[in-house]
Length: 118
Image (cartoon, rainbow, N blue to C red; front, side, top):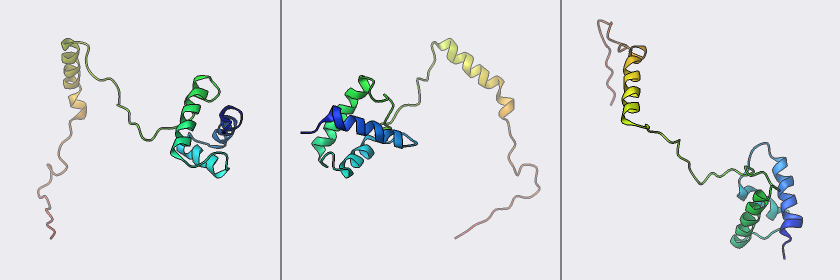
């Protein structure tokens, strides 16, 4: 039987401190397997996941201890509070358009080279 709270979580905490970045849970899992503290099975991985969730909820581990490279996030809540705010934003863009105006690179040249490759 694995002593999750007495042995594994303290070792997880020690391993987390040894990284200069936030590792994935899987990285920690394989380190624990390499130390022969747990077996390399899917059920043990799931148990480690559940145990670290509880440890983070109880404040034993940092809530942001692990990075999650699987789940993606959206870039934010974009939109407008009202049609008026949308129109005002569009007008601001229009007012600022001279700052973004550029002429084509070749517009002032007498000739424009065209290169064809096969």
